[in-house]
Length: 405
Image (tube, rainbow, N blue to C red):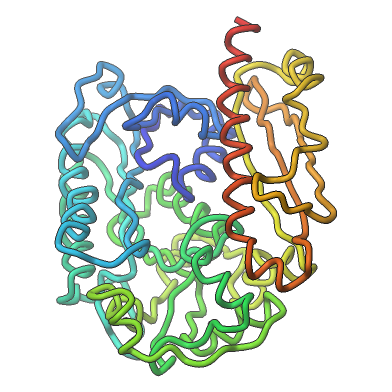
């Protein structure tokens, strides 16, 4: 199929795109920055440049789209909620989805659109099925309007009400790892509120289910079968990173740090996964501890890790000569802070993928001075590592096209 993806550079979009490309689909991506998208995306695609939050796009390729996956949206929990922040969150989802629907052809078969488990609002211990009504807070109203906009698309529509995604890089867990590895991460508020979560492999699987199964329609909770309380989640995360649970974080502190966002951070959502299983999905990670152990495995060895992926539309045989010089980073200069990293290993993999190469860079290292070194400088060093590979991706993309085409 010819499939359009919005928000493809995000956590779900990158993994989903690789799966769809391997299945032989022709992928089209909407991005505000086409050059950057081509450097970041780990799968072959055509990029349609534009900003859907500013209006519908005009591109002849959109008229031949058979299916669409809508993942775009301003990050929700990366900063305090101001009125301007909430406007951006709303417009990047609701207004942009309305504009997307106007771009889609009448012959469209299916639109799978992101939503969130926050649709139901703060629901206590109630088991939330897809028949439940929307809540009254900002996130609930946002999700309700978001789904209503997507429902106007031609063909079949599915809305994936996603819980907290557990992944090694990216997502909400990224923000939680530092305090929990430091031993100061604790329960939020009372810790009795329910949390709906899902492993990255399973949320990608649910999107594929929604796309491919003609029975799938309407809302689907994108959550694992066994939600937990915040206290249970916090204890499991501390165990997974080899640390201990810190003191509780009281509500007044959350209000001070996050403003209006605080109430959403402690909202109770006990999502039910019965519909996805009814439609034939079998979860890879139904239990929380198993999922956390998978994503946190490197930390149990005291390691830091970083993974970068890049699709290059030439075969490994043609690409490998480029890596005999400076681009082959068997030994990378230490980050600019001057820390001499311990056990630094860089393993590039040149994987044949969809007629080209999926270049996968895996980096593992340990901070000097043990726990103290990690506590003081790990975040700064991680940023330097990210910058090194961002620079490398740009140069590899430019040189591969210049020398091989």
